[in-house]
Length: 495
Image 1 (cartoon, helix red, strand yellow):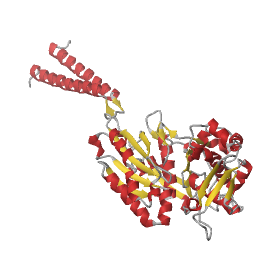
Image 2 (cartoon, helix red, strand yellow):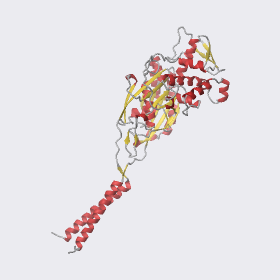
Image 3 (tube, one colour):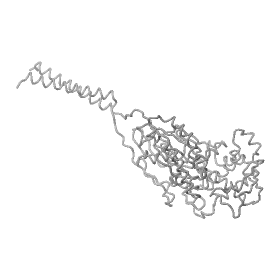
Image 4 (cartoon, one colour):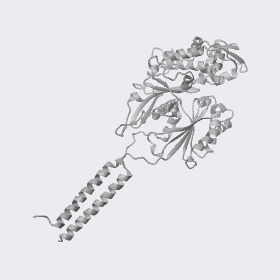
């Protein structure tokens, strides 16, 4: 017996209900995807107060990317004049020296966001040395630079002197953060931990200190050289050591003092200076640093006449005297001066002074150690006249020092840190990573703001707006059709 017209109508309505519900379910599932908040840029400001100069970094990132990746630099500015430690006798001058760069930074950060922009000043080996010499003068310099920064509409978080280990480890964080070697996305869109071999080491050469930082194969045996991090859900045991007085500027001062010790006369031959170069140096200027202690009964008014001889073999011999390679004895887990160092492991980025010197010598293209040695050697044989003719735009004080710097860097990396002909290819001389200058400043800010989480970020799902709205419409329609079906059934089949 056939169904009545009301039964057919109810059946049709129920069928429509099923179809609409199915479509709503499909739309709600298909519409799920990773969604992003509208870009709202945030800013951070770091002053890197080094021994030779101060550098201002302005960073920016999308507001929704805290605890993730995506922070990049929008400004790197060199503060005119020397480092703040040079203003020991003129603290107000240290503060005044920062104004030009801070004024520029304020033109980049929107006025409505300036007061929420965190600002930091971190000082490194130059101020560490000044604090050793005279802590009162160091405090006065810090007070003046802090007073100046507080006059700007930023959220100033204070000034501090970094330890050598902090300087090294923050540089390590900067490189690995920028290159996303600490955490990355898989093809499935999930956070995964990279292999340990992908994590990069950091080699930093400043004016007054140098740092080596990397993740060794085994455990770090000396706790004073170990830094522990938990980043994105993974534990890292990192080796780091900072050699105070082994930055480029202090090392070259010490080299001159070594040559003076060998020949205490007022006429001094310098094998690392180009042949034909000559300058006068006062004893007071030479022995002004704690890194270069003056000999007993030294007359600070003496004037030394320094003449370059351009003798690379003698230059290397003199540079080696800056290092104590015998203090390690037969212990292979040692760098120099008796300092513990596990064997260098993995790929390294060498930046700051390493990069600037080798970039000038056109040695940042992955040349082998033998080629690097030969190139530096050939440069050291050129006369002052040849160099001035070949590099007329270079400042004389820099041009004079490139042979000394190259000889020091080669000795430090090859004999000090034990990079041989094979492992030399693991060193990449770079100024930037991911279009952002490399240094400790970014890692410093990331650490103080906790923008690198200890645990891997939790990923959530969201709906595409259009598909979500369509799903809601179908759900409402389904409910309406179902309600009509019930009403029809009740009306046509009353109790």
